[in-house]
Image 1 (cartoon, rainbow, N blue to C red):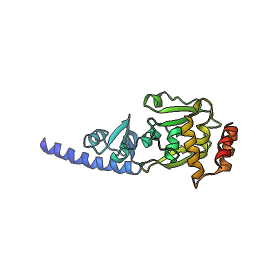
Image 2: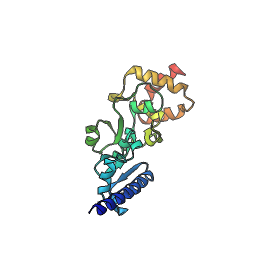
Image 3: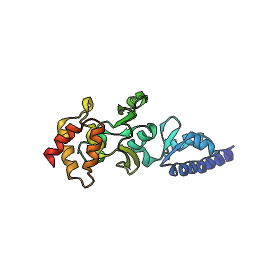
Image 4: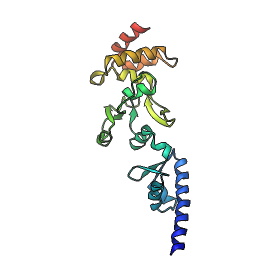
Amino acid sequence: MRSFIFVRAVADMTYIEQIVNIAKEHNGMVTATQVTEARIPRRCLTEGVKKNRLFKVDRGVYVLPDIWEDEMLIFQYKYPKGIFSFGTALYLHGLTDRTPLRYTMTFPQGYNISAAQKNGVDAKIVTEQHYPLGVMEMNSPSKNKIKVYDQERTLCDIVRGKNAVDVQVVNAAMKSYIKSREKNIDKLYRYAEKLRVKTKIAQYMEVLL
């Protein structure tokens, strides 16, 4: 009996290593489905968690310890339609020194945002037409790839209607943008026209340029 337990423990450790390798091949994440497809007993996921080799972030979704610290990547995985935006995008682009208390993500119209909101995401909804405008990929603070709106789209968003943010934040962001080597004023005006904030953007640019 003891020998059986020993053999099973060794086998589980080997399985855990296989699971870790699968995770490494998939941006540090692994699902229960992938484990089953690899013909690995699902109990080994639980064993991996007990041994701190894995962390469970959602039903059937596990991550490696270094990914566990990257909440942005986890949110991106859980809500793949979400694009980091507004204050979160400002922070990622270095246009504000305010660390976001809650991450803001923008979703296309018709998407059910209740789960994201329940998990602390400040969820915004935008029309299907405007949803893809300015989407780019960049590194999170933990150096993992996430989707975020570019600088120009973000500046247009923070002055739009009821979603407009604090004027001090806007002023600081506009000044930082003007100093940026990556700024693209032509693109900013194109976005502003599509999002119907051209007048507001022009007022800031006339003062700063």
